[in-house]
Image (cartoon, rainbow, N blue to C red; front, side, top):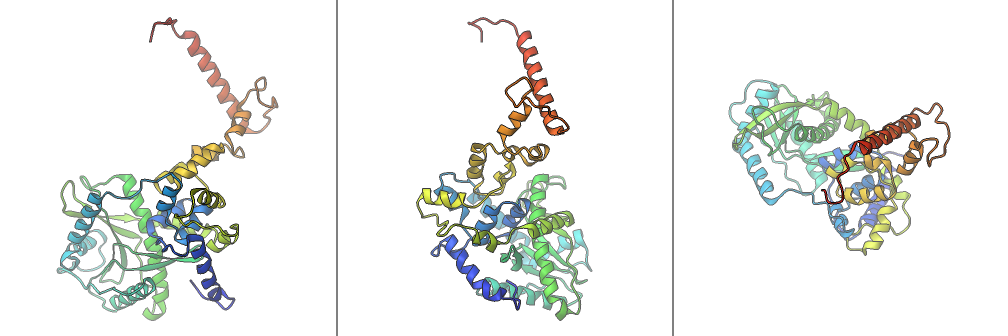
Length: 397
């Protein structure tokens, strides 16, 4: 966390202690990765996720303790296949990976075999960040050659706390440019891959690009200028149905801009933690009723998209449906309904003047007028369908 003369440095230990109490002092923090940050940026209004991720709460275990397990995670087979493919891509000093980087991104003469692969091992996350930045500085001083950073560690400040991120690789080009590499196990068939999976990979890579830009900013003074962080990342996947790697350049400028804007809108973790009732703790070993009260003490912003990104989505969906919240129907529906925030309000507004609603004139409210017109058309369609249906008799099916 950044230090300033106004006391931010002295507040950091207090915040860490408070977050440890929220998580459970005996529970190790769950690291905040790029996938979680991309999901958090997609829903910046959810204080619940911001707090749980910032405190390092084990959301999968928490969901199980609440009786709504998420079912997230890769199968063991997929996990092993992904690791085997990544090892193949990075073999021989990353020769194949650097060949793909040159073919897809350019940045200098073609590599002659593998490149420099500095050692990045260090005892802790902060030390690994420092070692990564030192390796980047050294690579920037070796103009004319290729350098591959295998599983570097980057730091990104999010909502007042530091997130440590580990991309698959970073390539330093002979011209001095830095590129993020994403290695995925889904295939590219005839040169293209599943659009949804590529989009998810692009959002994840955009988080790495933001963190790499922060590292470049910190190194700018020592390097005599800010290194060029490329906004095109290298996506490496198996080719067709083989285990041979192929690559594609993916432009993440749009995802980077959206992610940066959304992360900047996040409420700071300390503000959310300060609003908690005394004694709130998310230790999964606590009684379920106590955990339920703890979870419900933090406001959530559920949307159907959460089902593919958050372990607590099933719990939040149940609560949203029970409360009649229109966000359970989707953000687009919520946006169309304007100030109507509950299903009951929508049904009341849709009731015709001679029905069970308030009977008032919708006046200039376009949303209410549209709802009443839709309700009237639905009633007419049902009446027409009922009148035209043949009499099938009690024995017919």
